[in-house]
Amino acid sequence: MTSIISQSKDRRNVLITGVNQGIGYALSKNYMKQGDKVFAVCRKSTQALQDLTNVTIIDDIDITDDHKLADLKNKLSGITFDIVINNAGIMTEEVLGGIKSEDLVRQFMPNIVAHLNTTQELRENLSLGSKVVFITSRMGVC
Ligand SMILES: NC(=O)c1ccc[n+]([C@@H]2O[C@H](COP(=O)([O-])OP(=O)(O)OC[C@H]3O[C@@H](n4cnc5c(N)ncnc54)[C@H](OP(=O)(O)O)[C@@H]3O)[C@@H](O)[C@H]2O)c1
Image (cartoon, rainbow, N blue to C red; front, top):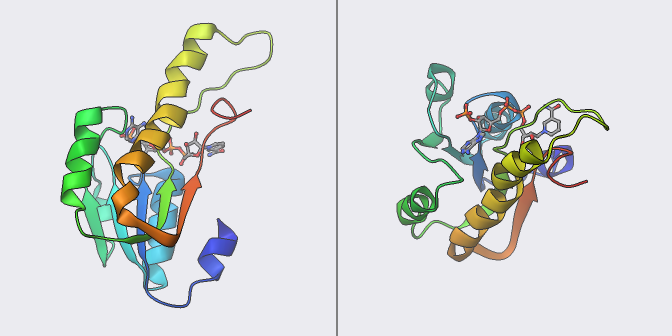
């Protein structure tokens, strides 16, 4: 992630999911600070997110809901993204020996399936050279 940020030269269109806190919010702030145009996707916005300038907030998007992903696609029609960061996800604390199947399955949807579905929905918003980043937990990709 750091190398992508530090390579910034021109103003780019950057889409990030899971932006209302944590890594997604920090990324939004960093890209915004260096002059990129950020499209911040979340389920529910926050005041801190709204206080960022040059950030377009797209809320009410649950990435596990196909209808919401279709809404997202419609809202972003005609925009080409230089960078798409699939960041939204969940992580739970588990140790080997105490991992339950249902917990793995619950994490698989937002952390893997939804990232791929989001990327698929946005495929017309990508062009040659666009970068797609996947941030997930150890339970998403081992
Ligand atoms: N922090 C770490 O140490 C660490 C380590 C390994 C991997 N990761 C991964 O890095 C990513 C970000 O982690 P973080 O620490 O910043 O976590 P975080 O503070 O819990 O933030 C996760 C974000 O994902 C959003 N989200 C979760 N499920 C969603 C869904 N179905 N649809 C839309 N948004 C959803 C949350 O939104 P809501 O507020 O609406 O829930 C929140 O904005 C996650 O994918 C996580 O698995 C983090």
